[in-house]
Image (tube, rainbow over all chains, first blue to last red; front, side, top):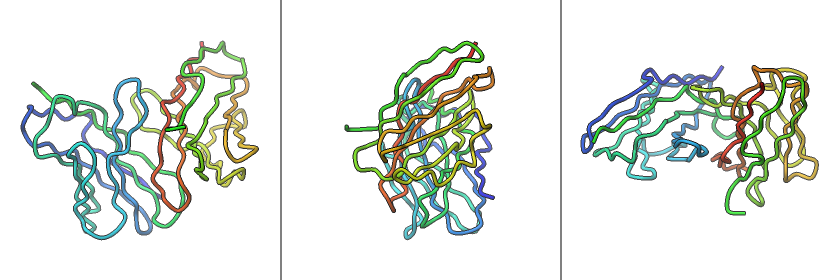
Length: 114
Length: 113
């Protein structure tokens, strides 16, 4: 069965510092991997996805994520955090080459300190 | 429209009432998904349509939950005899076929008293 783990409920980072939000996954095939962000009272917004190819994926708002097959991880990163990055971040996985449901992690609340 | 829309945005129901939640997907998107997001949790899959066909309903928590998409566009999620544990945000998402990136609506927050 597919699953996603986000080991940190909350991450606090000072503005201007680099940030990392961790994610590991488990699938029985080749994964599609996603990061979504959720702001208060708003729907989920797509940040980036990994399908195949370069392990470093660049997405919206300066975010990037690194796919590591051996560690089954897909950590979200940003070189310099902004206060406006404070939100709830979800890592997600679905099976490659199938129009299929997405399995979400429980989410990590990112708090950027001014 | 420009994005996925859902209505109503907020719904308060008394326990035992039936509710209907509507989703308008992005025009032309073949696939439509419903998710349930409980407070403090990630969204959990409920059901999936490809055009009008319901291909996966494995996530529906009970037979009180029913979804339809009769013309392959707008979808309705119906919950009969609502219970307090049904209180959650119900998210709808759509995607273009063979593309797998899902676009989410703002959700309907259901509160069952």
